[in-house]
Structure formats: C-alpha cells, structure tokens
Image 1 (cartoon, rainbow, N blue to C red):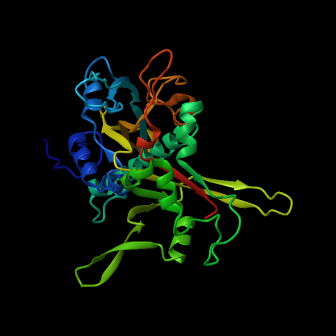
Image 2: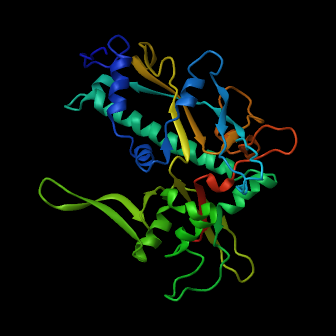
Length: 365
C-alpha cells in the first residue's frame, strides 16, 4: 500500500489509497454496532455475484430451502418415499451513492495542529455511516410496505402496533407505550420459538427515555484510565443491544374529536443475519480535483460507494427502478420487494416468514 507523506491538501499531493485507509480506520459507530450485534453479516455468494462482468448492478442468487416432510411408518411394509428441498430465488441490488465537498483555501483552514488526514477522514466516515443507516431505514420501510397475501403474512405478523391499546398496566403505565413485555411479545409474534435470534433494537430517544424511566434500559459501562466508571452510551433492553437514533420513523396523528393528538414511534428489532452486507466498492472511491480560478482556488473531494444491504428471506424485484442504482424512494416502494419464493408461475412456494429476523414495534412512546 502506498504511503502518504505530504501534508498539503491539493490535487497534486492527494493520495486516494492512503486516504481510503485512513477512512477505514475511523470507527463507524452505527454500522459497527449493527455488525457487532450480528444483524449484518457478510455473504460470499453475493460478493461473488458482483465480482464478475455479468452481475454489476443486480443479481438473482439461489437460496436453499429446509428439509421437511411427514415421517413414514417404518414397519417393514411401508415404502420409503424421498422428499426434495425447494430452491428459492432471491434478487439483490447494489446501492450506489456519491457525494462531494468543496473547501476554499482548505490547507490554511486546517493548519494549527490539526492532522488533516484524521480530521477529514473522520468526517467522511461519519457521513457514510449515517448514509448506510438511512439506507437500512429506507429498505425497512419498503419491506413493511409490501402487498399481496403471502407478503402480508410477514408485514402483519412482524408488526406489533400498540398505539390503540387502551388503559394502564398494573403499575399505572399506559399500555400504548413500550413496557416490560413489549419486546418479548413482538419477537414471539414474529418468530415464535425462534425469538431468541433477535439481538438488536433501534429506537427513537423518546422510546428510550420511556424505557429508562421504567428502569428497563441498562447502559453498558467501561472503566477509564483514572478508574472512573462511565456509560458507553449503548444500552440493552431484555438482553438486546439498543441503538438510539432520532431518525427512526415517526408519524404525527391529529386530534380526533375528544381523542388528543399523539405521535407514533417505530422501533425496529433485528436478529442475527437480518441483513446480508457486502461493500462492493467503486472504481475510484476517493479523488481530488483542484480549480485554481474559482474563489481564488479551491479543492473538491469526491467520494463514491457501492454496497449491498439485502434483508434475509426478502427479494428485491426491481419492478419500479429507473436506473442501475435504486433511489431512496425506490427502496421504500413496497412493489420492489417480495418474500423469497421458488419462481414458479403457479403455486409458488414462499419462505416461511417466521424465519426472517426482522420486526417492528409501533407505540406512542
């Protein structure tokens, strides 16, 4: 790998390889927590599909089914008939995004002891970290907007909406807000006896505050060099890691007669392998351009990325996609998503929706 030895920031001394290495070293907090929770996992099959000339933007990959069948009576008389597994088809798409930033007299702005590479790389890493989480939210909105009888088994079965539940629990807490049993109920409804696969919840700070007030949210701690124990800012709820982010979906509901206005909050609960994630990469992920005449001279940093976020058991159909990379609006379109099936023209066989470790809780707080 080439080494970066310059300190000037202009197109002549910019080293894209070194810059990319710096960016990769900066912790991507949100995505890293998703990976540590095992909600995101790599998929070699997807990586191989996009590493050749024929699958640069969209690919259909096989997804094998589970064995089954009713056991036969072994009595020396009954013939043993064999069963076969079903191979499902899963569509996956590469999501490409790009951005650029221009600074006037950038070199002068970053002198004074601040390391240029660390300063810029940290900002770029944080920016793409937020973009990746937004991409996940767009996809989640899309898959929970799916229509059709089989797809609705997932949408309805993996949604626990308690906003209309009236009354209070035995401790006087409103039943339309998250409480001691909410997470357990949501995961059991979604996946039955496989509910333990869920490992992460992403929620709005209003929901997190409610859990804190109920003493249901515990924060992980660490001991610093002075021996003082501090909060990490990462919580747990019933043993599941919690990410708090106010970009989680909200919906304001207007007053209706005597019923007051309120806000709906969506909390997503993800399990092991909820999303396959692969960084496919761009030909030139980072590059610089210098224009000496504009504003007395300015530098522009260009950044590009191509990544796959593929929800387990759900196929991207590309039915309503105008270009080779889906927009955020297209990712949110439920018509672009369907439960994985075997591709048959009639009597399609779909994946069991309970195998999909994705659920949501809709509450008033």
